[in-house]
View 1 (tube, each protein chain N blue to C red):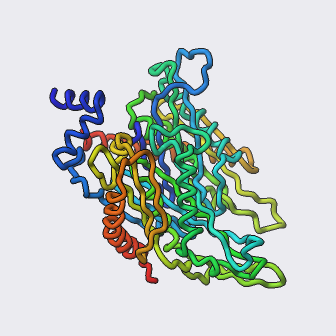
View 2: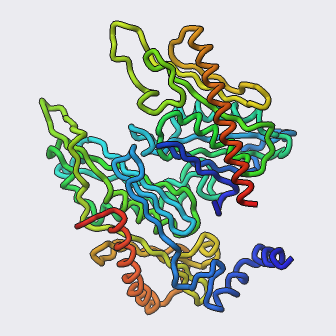
View 3: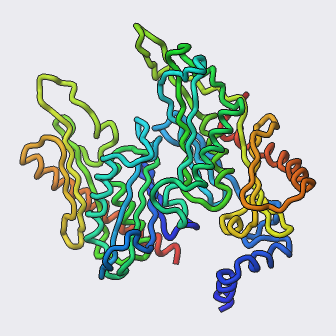
Length: 275
Length: 214
């Protein structure tokens, strides 16, 4: 009977239900406000992809696969290969997602992932070039969310990092103008740093680290940071209205560095990556 | 799985599939059906096969989607959810071969996990004629091999059936490739035996799961 009353309260007044917990310094899933959920990284599980990773952040499950294909380099960058990132959220990930074209949120996530790769030096694009102006590798990084329970961006960026660190490319030489691929000779992709993402949710005066989907829906705003493994920042964005002063933003920016270091260590262990 | 209505992660050797669905409002406002409607979307993820797949469904995936609806429709008691749509979404994470049969099994398991009433548990089995032998439950290499012998006309042929053992009914039957009539009959028999084995095993697993969760 008490469980039913609890459930009714949660359904009818979700914000107040959550606030009752947060005022006591705890969350409905028994975490403190600064605690993040358990994280599992499983790299290299797929045999069909050049690189892959499965990330579980609490109940959020994201899988990333990297497929490498041969292509012509872009005209303005003849000595570089290129990377194409895409985020996909199929209907199985959340009851709010329907079939059809990707939502704006999903497309924004694709852009975020693309920006991380294109505008930081994490992947050595010169390394992807085989013959200048004629032949290069193109990496298709496809990130798919299998279960969306909050902080999908965090899981997506980590999945992409782990999958790229796991990526192996076969040797390619050119004979009579045609590419010859030797599958037996393989080398790891040259990755210079591993990006990670950290999201904070804001509700009234409370700051929630790693919010679940329920918490995200109730937060007035979210703030996400993308950091690289050498400590540099690779991106910042907010969704909604976090209602923060500049001092608060600076405080949180300093705080997320510590968490980023821990995440990068986990990634390094999981993928066996050495710079 | 916390977020979805019901979902099942189905792991075959080197093949993982996830299915999710849930009764929801019909998308198109057609005349009201006295029965529920079953719809299905089958998709290979871009990195699941040897060649990269695009985000749009190609013809093969659309064909598989139709086959799955047809296979499951007979078994699901559609009159228990009138005016609603049962949406089955199947996503193949890694294709180790025989994806369609595995998808059908996964969908059946997910629907039963949801508590939706069914007449029987549809099982699917497929058989491939590889050289002179019949191979049940082919891997990717066995499914898509091309004939290396130019002198003989030999091609890989495949048969798939979806079978309801309790009703002794075949809901779906497909054959691709060249086969003699006797080979087809033999293939169907092999598929049926395979289905019965799978059905037994699934029954045991599901009963075990119900016992442990209740």
